Image (cartoon, rainbow, N blue to C red; front, side):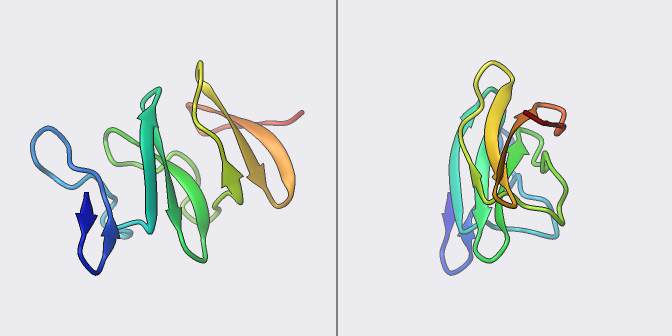
Length: 94
């Protein structure tokens, strides 16, 4: 959903906003794939949110670019390097 003047968020089946209390809204959100949706905050970068509203990766480190999850993995770019990220939030180095 778009919250006027604030950005985008998700609503769960109980009608509650999903975003973490510190973040509240994102500047852009993607669709859910394999239980995770890509989210973006201007000036921070990309991360993923799960259906419980929790960020997958470190709140202080955000990705430069991300793709969509497929078969439990997603391609991400962090500080100019490409990695795979699993559903536990662990970076897999090439």
